[in-house]
Image (cartoon, rainbow, N blue to C red; front, side):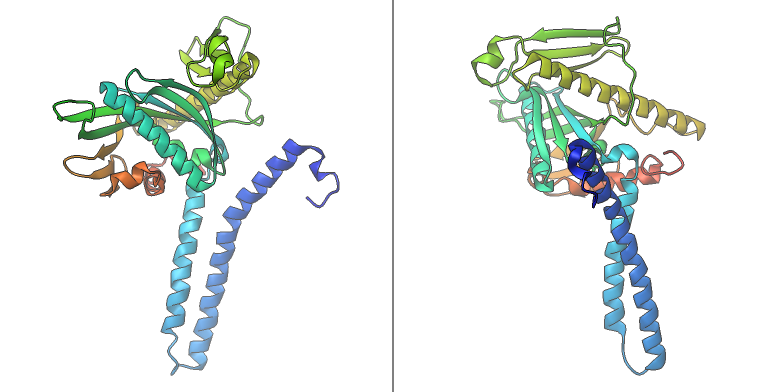
Length: 340
């Protein structure tokens, strides 16, 4: 960084800064732990030289600080896979439950946007399809920030909402579902071979469905890219230019194919260990949000439960994300050096 030509290549310089920040975040807690060990040794020497003096309070301060540092080190270990450092595409899809499901999908989208804003991350909307009465059918956003994918990767799966439906005239309790899919925005260090001009890729253009003025709604600027062998399809309508939307959609498709390869690799590792697959939850519900008659949110994997569902829906999701990371380490699916 001290070199005079450091900023000549902006992209390279920015990547280096990001890498430096990541390494500092990993190293500083370790340095703190080493210092804490030295502090304990010094305290032991003081006690040996002056046994009549009570050093309990000093020892308690060191212990409390050490526990906090140890938690930081554990967190860095949980976010230790290379892809954890990437930005993240997050897609919300309304599931079973009619209008309530569409409204729930919109609630989840807002929850993740609020969470990202509180983390200091940036959010870009790539596509959003409104539902007929309320809420959304699906939407995709890109969340940019340090370890964005690492934090969000455990959110993939089905989410379940139980409440008294505001869309039901009889006021009956309604159960609805929405699915979350999270994939990493991979950079140019990852190579995924795709024959864009071959039979494996189908590209369609269409009018954008969201708000954006006359141009975005009257021209076929939206682009959908489908990977025929896997059936994976992505759509982008965030830009006025069809060319820009095509470029972004291709990047999203590459990210999904990379995620698919990661899942295959994890499944192979699990099979070698004689374990069941721990990823690709498919139709499994990973979290329940109950608003009536009880009030709680409970994760089905880590079993973390809170009695404040409205707070969670306002974006305070960190405890569930961290609980998932700790659970996944116990399951052997996160931060395992043997698998990296």
